[in-house]
Length: 626
Image (tube, rainbow, N blue to C red; front, side, top):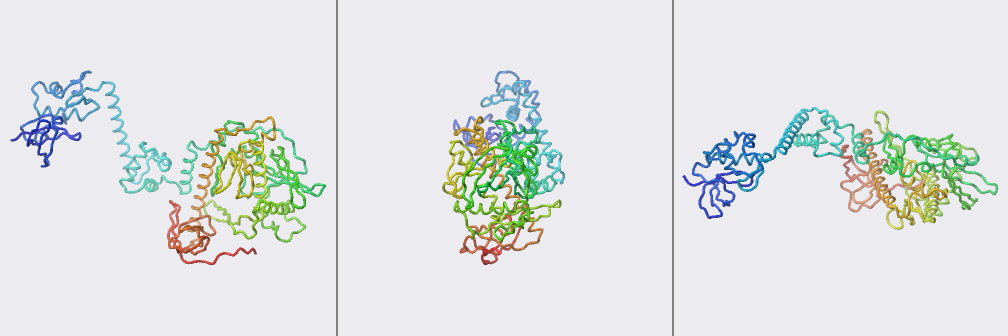
C-alpha cells in the first residue's frame, strides 16, 4: 500500500495517495481520482493505511471527543500543538488516527480553540468561552423559534408575534428580526412573496389600510402624535369695523377654513375688498413643540375617505374662520375703483367677524355671473360675489392669463360610504367660483411676497423664472402666474410654507417682532428642502389612492371601455376619472391630446395598475359652453 497524506484544503480535512513528493509540494491522487498538487504546509500527517478508512476512523473518533474535557486538558494561556493536545487527551501512546481526530475536533470548535498557525492552537479564556457558548445557544433557540413560525405559516396559521410585526415586515422590514426571517423563509419555501404569504394568513388588512400603513410608516416613522398640545393663547388684536362682514367659500367637507373675503361700498363710489387669512402663526412660538410638529408634518395629508391634519384639532378649531366667530386674521384691504383698478392697499392684523361659511356645493348652481344677473340674491353675498368675479376677470387680464377659450381641466371628488361604495364627482376647474377664489388668493399671495422681497426678508417663495416651478428662499418672477413675486400665505392651517411666510410677514406688521428666519438661515434651507420632499410625497399618495378607488369604481360599475386623451407616447389620461394608464397599440402617428377609445383587459388592485388596449380614435371635444 502506498504512502498517503492527511491535509487541509478550503477548511476541510482530506486524504490522498502520494504520487510524488517534491519538497514544497506533493503530487497526489485525490479520493475522487483527480491528480492535484498539495502544498507541504497544508499537510499534517503521512500514513500507510487505507486512506478512506483512515479518514472515516478519524472522523468517528473526533465526533466522540468530549470538547469540554479537551478544553480543560489543554486550558492555559500558552499555545499548544495538536500533538500536545492528543497527549493530554489520549495519553502518550496516541495513534496517527487519534492525532488526526484531535485536529478535526480542534478545527471544528473555533469558539473553544483559536488557531495560531499550522497545527498550533490556544484555548479560549473561560469568560469569553461562556459568552460565545451563550450566543450559540441563543442562536439555536432563535432558529428553533423561526422554524416553529415557519411551520405555522405554511400550515395557514398566523403567529401572534408575526401579526404584531406585520406592518413593519411589509413596509419597513428589519431583515435581522426573527419575525422577518421566518416570513422570508416560509415565503421562499412556498415560492411566493412575503406579501402574498401574509395576505393568505390574514396579516394584511384591506388594501386601502395596507397602503395607508405603508405611507404612515414612511412619512411618520415615529407615529402620529395624540394632538396633546395646550390650547393656544390668542393675542388681543384690534377688532375690524362691524361693516366688515367676512364670509368664506369652501367645499362641504372643509374643516380648516383658511380664508374669507368681505366687500364694502365706499362713499367715493369705490369698493373696499377685504381678503382675510387665518393666522395661527401669531400664536406658535419658535422652536416650540407645535412648530416642530408643523415642520415634521409640513402639510395636511388628503386622500379619499380621510385626512391627517398638519395642526392639532384644538388649534384648527381656535383659528379656523368659522361662521359666527370672531377670529384673528391677516387682512389685505384693496380699494378698487369702478374700472377695477386698485387705488390703494393696506395690510393689518385684526380680529374679524365671520358671518357665513358658504359651501360650493350649495351655491354653485345659482352662481352664474356670466349670465344675466338678477336683482334678487339667490344666497347670502351673491351680489358681492358677482362683483368679485368681475374683479377676478380683470386681474386675470392684468396678469395676461385670461383665456375664455381655454381647454377644460377637471377636478375629481371621490366619496365613500360605510360600505366603500364609490362615487366620483367631476367638476370643471376654472368654474366661476374657482376663478373668483383663486384670483383673490393669487393677489394676496403676490402682494405679501412683494412685501417680503422689498423688506429683504427671506421666505419660501414659489418661483418660475424659466422652466418648472420650484421653491426658493429669495423671490423671483413666476411666469406661469404672470407675477413678479409669489409665495404661499393663504393656507396656514394646512401648509408649513404658509406658516413660515406668515411669520416673516408678521415681523413687518408688528415692529417689535423679530423675523423667524434670517436671509441665510441654514434652518430655512432645511425647511424648504423638507417641505418640497414631503409635499410631493403627500401628493403622490393622494394620487395613488385616487387611482386605487378609480379602479374600484371601474369594477363596481362593470365598465369595459374607457375614453382617454393621449399625453405622450402610450401614456393616456382617462376621461371622467383621476387615473392615467399606458395603452397597448397606440398608433405611432397619434398626436398628443388626441382622444381614443380604450378597452380594459385587466386590473391589479395590489399594484394599482390597469391594462389597456387601444380600440379606435375619437373626435376631439369641443369647447363650446352650453
